[in-house]
Amino acid sequence: MARGVKQLIFFVSLFLTLLVLCRGSTIGVCYGRNADDLPTPDKVAQLVQQHKIKYLRIYDSNIQVLKAFANTGVELMIGITNSDLLPFSQFQSNVDTWLRNSILPYYPAARITCITVGAEVTESPGNASALVVPAMHNVLVALKKVGLHKKIKVSSTHSLGVLDSPNNVSLDYALFESSSEVIDPNTGLLYTNMFDAQIDAIYFALMALNFRTIKVMVTETGWPSKGSSKEKAATPDNAQTYNTNLIRHVINNSGTPAKLGEELDIYIFSLFNENRKPGIESERNWGLFYPDQTSVYNLDFSGKGNAIDWACGSGNVDCSAIQPSQPCFEPDTLVSHASYAFNSYYQQNGATDVACSFGGTGVKVDKDPSYDNCMYMITGTNKTAASNTTAIAATSSSAQNEAYAWISSFLLMTSIVYFFI
Image (cartoon, rainbow, N blue to C red; front, side):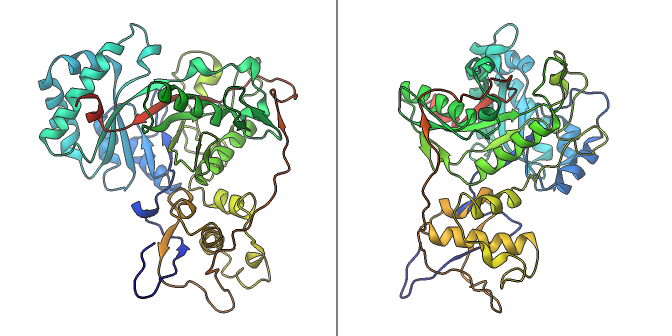
């Protein structure tokens, strides 16, 4: 925090814009289009804005989609399909032409911030792994030619399906609902959910190869709302529980047991149910919305409501002042209550950037937001609370259920220059 002749005391308030100073973890959604009954891209763009979804992943560079999201402020992660890896890896001119015709006419109106080259190539037929790095190199070169290599990241997504073992995972553990902890016998770290265990598996694998600073982004994770008679865990209630708890877990920036306080960006799969996807019934029912744009279940994409719940619960903030008949209850709005709760958490946890982000919904201001008899905290109290959980040396003793939460791909977010020094 900057210091001058006198120290400024900063408060956390809530704004509609995101500041890099206090960005925090972000929540995005995957927009797959493997269906024949989806709304037009223009209507999808309206739906995304209506639900305040600020980050979107698409799996190609479809021109109609890029046009639809122009000037919406939604940040786009676009993809180069596996079928394009061969021509993109062989000739720089192919990539240059693609960039000139498919990207530059719509940028920066379409806020493209990342290009993924290939998708889960190790899992696809005719493993094209050897083509990924040459194609990524050519994409980087093309971006350098037009001066966008520092504005648009380049990477590739990889499947984590090999880490999953549904037969040994309890439903509660997968849904972030476990009341007990699991001890990793190799590290001694304690885990309360499968998500953290999978993310840390990536970190430890990278560290084993001496890569300790690469940022991990989860580009697909979710839960299906419907399945066959054998897929009993695929229900709307479980899907809502998983995604709600996921957002709450990520947005508080607590990190994982191996990376405490580490920000983690995620993309929820998927925006719509996709009726043309092959495979078992659940494959066509991962959507947050039906094709008619109605919600499969309610979900707070902004995380503000989830963040208030977390701050006033696990965050140990005294939120009595924003309860009915109390000084800070009025105005009875989400923004006002979030501003009070976020500031209290920020102040009592050292006034650090990590304590102010709340997934990008909190920013620092230098004006005291106190009003009438509602007084905002201005000094840290560093409150703590004892945990009432007990570590156990094995998985939860609750009944083992079939779990459908897969972090199906992740993204190593680092400069592509790393690979080509």
